[in-house]
Length: 344
Image 1 (cartoon, rainbow, N blue to C red):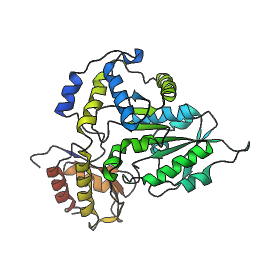
Image 2: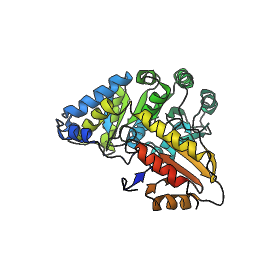
Image 3: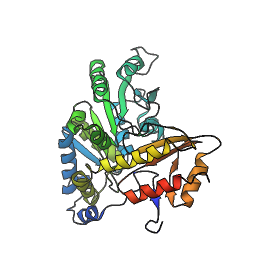
């Protein structure tokens, strides 16, 4: 492995800024964003809003914050949020819905984390005093725990129509939405029209060091700005970070197809590997597989680490590998060679 020091498949959050992105960050014009005076933050918020056909955007430190702000502005304490049992907003945000908003989750077992309009219809609580009011539906696309799977756009349209019919708000956790757009050859505005709010992450597939943008109407984003302040999420000269987002929008979207190709190459090898029990279908940049007994996820991760490759155990026998802009073809080839040596 003379050309490599480490091959890191743990997440697409481990990337470093490219030289071009770093140069854009260093050249950014900045001001105090809490006072609304950072021109680069404003440019990012406006460009993202225009891209998805929304009125306004709010730059935040993380996708967890944008999701939690969205829950807060759509609900009141005692309400209920409908989502998949695998949803990031439930699984990986430290109980934030309960802590910040005083709401409970109504969990739906979906297909790899994807839920349907009919399931949501059945989950909506009746209007009676013993039940919490259903106020918000949260959709994640792509679904992290579902192996990066993508919703069918027609199903999302049905979900959107149902929410409007029943008076529910609809939020998209689009942490990896650009992956879905590239994989399905769809347009951002096709999603913007369906959701009341959208959370779009910049520090995953797009390779930025920090940041997510919450999108919605001007009224909702003004409310969200206050909640961001309440949560301690106001940043001052944040334009240095926002500049990375603007660079990524210009340079890092179309290249996501390379990540998908790398993930599919890994999947093609893993599905025939004698130690692999099953593999989730691979649509984008996430590969999740289950090992056969007696092999464990920890033993597999330790073996790969010994050879300079990092993977993420997500269960006793389950492994996640995520491709990203710091994974290059020679790294994939080297990984395939090491996989062929496991469990020797």
